[in-house]
Image 1 (tube, rainbow, N blue to C red):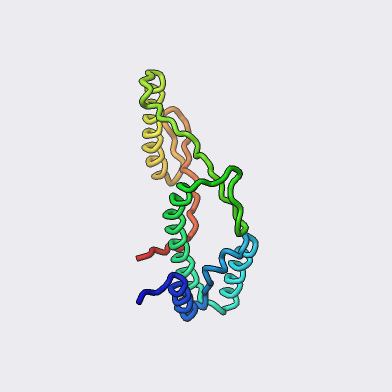
Image 2: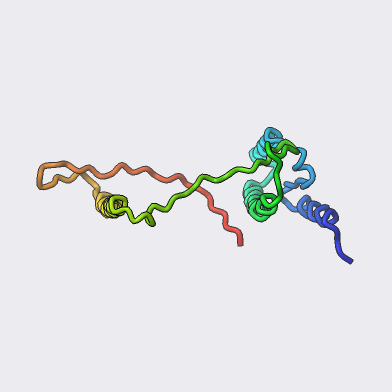
Length: 170
């Protein structure tokens, strides 16, 4: 005997609620939330983490998995919605607005057979390659260096990257 979609969602929500993170939500309740209440809910999760009521690592994993799940749903459902006729002016429901929108046109100038554009593009690519090579050299400088024509070249300023946390789903 098969399980209906509603029964499956209810079962899955029960499983999620029993996990150690204590983070859970009902998919049906998401339709009732607006942007402000979603922000407030997220802030309450952060508050619970800061107060020690939730494990930060588990909450991060939960959020990353949820983000991946919802991204996949959006990417796969968007074309289905796009194939349906959205009335002029859009569709408003559940504190959202769905409108049809044309992406900006993109142009491929390489097919124009315009010698001036081709020449400029070649020069641009050549200059970009030369700059990359020069930047590699400049990164090796640890102190100012004098050139043959008397110019003083300083080492580049180092902008340190921020420490971050990467989460990979397997």
